[in-house]
Structure formats: C-alpha cells, structure tokens
Length: 83
Image: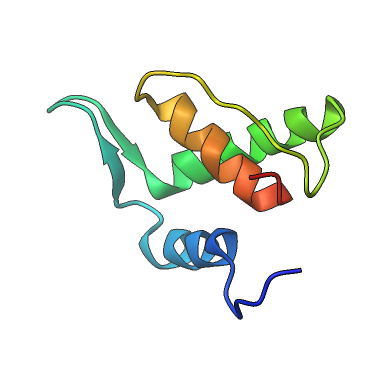
C-alpha cells in the first residue's frame, strides 16, 4: 500500500492529457515520440504483461538499451503496479 497521494502512472496520465501531441522522447531530428504515442504503446505493453500473468506487486526486470520500447515498458509496469 502506497503512502503517497499521487502515483507516477496517474501523473503520467495527466501529462498525456495536457500535452498529448508534444514530444515525450526525442532521439534525433527526425525521431520524435509524442506523449500520446508513448501512452498508447505503454497501454499495449501493459495488456501484454497482464496476459503473461504479471500482476500488481510483481517485480519485472528490464534489460534494454535506451529506446522508446524501454520507456514504454517502464510506464506499463507503473500502470499495472509491477515495479
């Protein structure tokens, strides 16, 4: 049980709502990922993780270089409560 009144996933959701088409990740001049895209990707990853049996409180190990998918996995884990 969290002692904090705000959850990082909730804060991310608020940021997405306020800045949907703004850049969340910038990899180069031609590769920009919006908050909306990152949010949708993380939702898909969260669905996949749940289908694989990952539940709230489970631990998920992520071993990836910096990339859009790595950030989406981190956010997905936060969304389902699996740090």
